Image 1 (cartoon, rainbow, N blue to C red):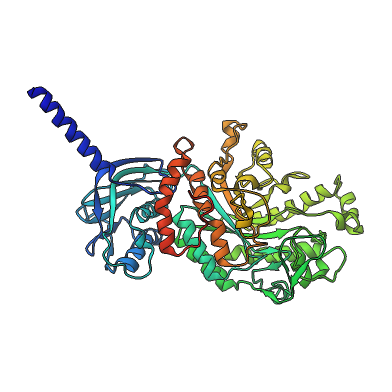
Image 2 (image 1 turned 90 degrees about the vertical axis):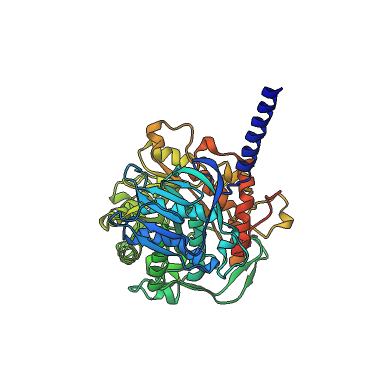
Length: 546
């Protein structure tokens, strides 16, 4: 009987400990690569200090990502202390950051959350930054408020975490040409990218419906190309179209561009500008019609779609684009310039004496090879400025420029072909990654969209690396990206509705190891993230929520 009693008591004790352990929840998205739950909680208070290992400005940005939220929401006056000489040892009530050069991935981190302290190891500031985002998600959702929250225990559950992203490129593209977002709104979206550990912001700045970046050498791009006199109302139809007859547009000054880029850098987000060529050029041609095959006149488009008037590959066109790019590269310190390259009709080139003569003189086969010549010539210039190009997968047609990175949107086939040729690839297929598509089958309950159907579960199932690639070829898959085209998305609240929470699903698809992904488990963790959204006042969609 005594043995039975001891056994029962032991089982009860184990069950009690398990129950205590299971009281902790870990609502983290994207899911860390490894997380081991522990008992207990660490509680932030007014005396909690953040200890950083260097005085590096990026290290301060990483620490401030957490400190800023604490200062705004708790009312505490927490501080950052620099531990350059190693005089400060791990102690109580600290978030203690330590450099670990054996962690080779710059975005990776290790974190131990104990009852009396949090210790973080990383090899670079980015790793510390993402550890801070994890802590932020584990804190009560009131951490997102910009005013002091009362009667909140600022606790995070104890755990050990080892985490790193599956892919180095994790992106979102925002179209500001069809409908414009001011600089403050762009910063708002960059904040949310950082929260989800998304590290690339692809800024679609030029198109037929508007040119959004100031170019000092060509002032008419801001005076003329940034504005249209009408905008399509309702769905795209071929007859009976209705327009809002009103001047609409806007552009970013170079100073505003610099502010956004600097702001993104503090959030460990790299901004990639897109300057469309040779197609999607009508807005630019409205200001400078001499860059076309016909000479115009043109007006900035208020209709969506693809248009026949494109840049003519004359010397004056290349001079124009080189001058534009020369100003653009000074504003964006990142590695890439996106040159578009998609949806370029060849009708004007086929009926242009100059273009047809050029094809013969250069020994080209057809208009597709003329586009390849166009892209390759611009790539050489962009490379001379120390940058690389990204282009949509149409740049494969007629031959791929030597150093180009391909963004594969028409399925994954273009990306597969590019990877097999030894080119880097970013996967962004419409069927998984187009967030302008409907997110519910019940379209009558959804705002008007361009079409398609991409529910959150579909985004979550996205795998950027096709199984058909060899290991060597697969190394060229840099990651994935979601795109938000804005023909039918005019307001910032509508942007939020289309982005969230599908962006959370994308973040896990490109961060978390494939064997750790589980949609049902993601939906449980998402409940905690949605509470953060509520505190942020995000107008997120509930279409895919049970």
